Length: 98
Image (cartoon, rainbow, N blue to C red; front, side, top):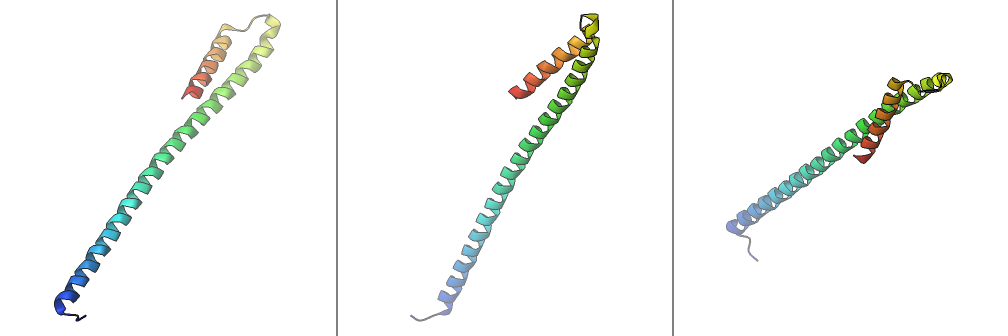
């Protein structure tokens, strides 16, 4: 096989085209991977926020329950404390449904 200038230029052109295809496919793969990871990071942040909200609700619920235990000598839970307990229980149920 005789290597003429035309064949050499053609092979160099094919090499350049193949290199561009490899670069383009690598860029596409990188962008899709980064996009997927970005979406996962957003999901994890929402989950962390939900966990933090549940932690705060639980802390307030425990403190209010402790106050209710102290008030048990009166024979009735204070209406304000009962409202706080009920709202925190509802909040916890709503957070679990997310």
